[in-house]
Length: 191
Image (tube, rainbow, N blue to C red; front, top):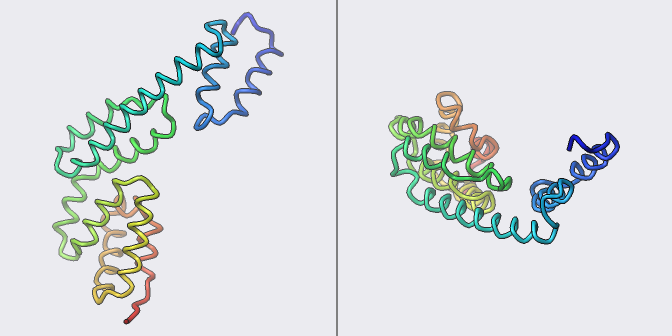
């Protein structure tokens, strides 16, 4: 863009910065290509849309496949496979891959948590299942767990585990601090 005037550059930036990269990434790329004279807007949009769709299908397929075998795959294999998923042009999937990378790095801590004497395996299994899921599905699991935990006779033991996690496994606790806090503040209910 060195051949453009400062005014043209400002207009370009003003227009692009008003666009949302999560929902308008195709328009941003198309507009840039048009400005640079690389292609006509219609042709760029068609090529980009097809390419983005192909990338999205490939990435979501790999993510879903990794989620299914996450807890039985060696940690380094998971980290390598997550690094190979190309989400550079898929800003909506970048947080998902980043979260899975964080969780993969915490696998040794999860293994230690399972061995801890104050651990309730039901809660650990719920955590492991829930953190793998997209937010909407995870929300349903969290809500169901809260409803059941309020009536469970083991609620004080679960709450003791939550406090232990906060103290001894803060990185796991920080994956879902609001949910853990809600569990810790639950009052027992009786049928």
